[in-house]
Structures are given as C-alpha cells and as structure tokens.
Image 1 (cartoon, rainbow, N blue to C red):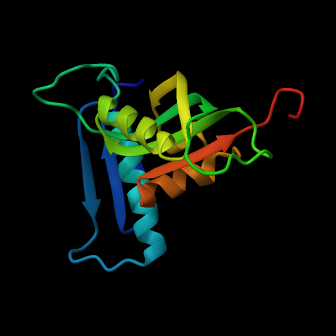
Image 2: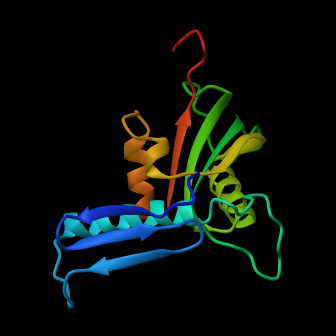
Length: 170
C-alpha cells in the first residue's frame, strides 16, 4: 500500500475524503451539509472503505483483549453441516453440507467469528471449519456477484449467504 495520502472525491464539489495509512480527514464544502439518502450511502461506503484502508497494518488476528479493535467489514467463509439433532422436520431437499459466506460489519476479529458461528448455529447448521476470515472493502467485491451482499452488510451489519451447490453443479 502506498504511504502517500489518497484523496477521494466522494460527493464531487461537496465532500472529499483524504485517507492515509493511519488516519482520514473528511473535507466538507459547507456546514451543515444537506445530502440525499443515496449520497449518505455513498458517503457511508467511502468511510467504511477508508476505515479499512487506515487499519491496514493492524493484523486481523491480533488478540488484544484489553483494547479490541473494531474492523470496518470482515468476510468469513465457513463449511457447515446440517444439525442431525435439530428440532422439527428435516427438509429433505436441502443438502447435508454447504458453505456460508458472511459479511460482518464493525466487530472485533473474535466477535465477528462469534456472531457468524452463532447465527449459523441458530439456523440448524453446525460450523465444521472456517475457510477464510479477513478484513475487506468494497474494492474486494467490485464488479462481482458478491458486491450486493457487501453493500447490504453496510446497512444491515450482517449478511449470510448459504451456498449448497457442489462443484459439479457450478
């Protein structure tokens, strides 16, 4: 990553963001600034991405219990199996194994994992392994099928996508 600050024109002529490795500066044309809902979402996305950039040197697996760092957005991929002891009828159309893609906003590394596993367990699946866990920004999903899920997590805090397809089905 470059050490030079990056200037992002979030709302051209009205709001810009200057992002360096450890800080960011929000520049506003005038105060108070009246913006639309769409402009607010653009600004939220830019701030989330800038926060991820400014935290780039913080190791995601850092275990500092006295001062846990909140990570703007995390992406977790887990393998899961149907819970054989789940109450109620088992849907025979669902496979026994799947992958879950998770986007978790503004949690520490450990909390994000607890949130993801807890939410999955509530849906009668059991997490068997964590395949991936990393800090992400919008750039990681730009122009992909997953971009909409990242954007949804910006407003909903958590998004879970269950993928039960097998390699032969893809």
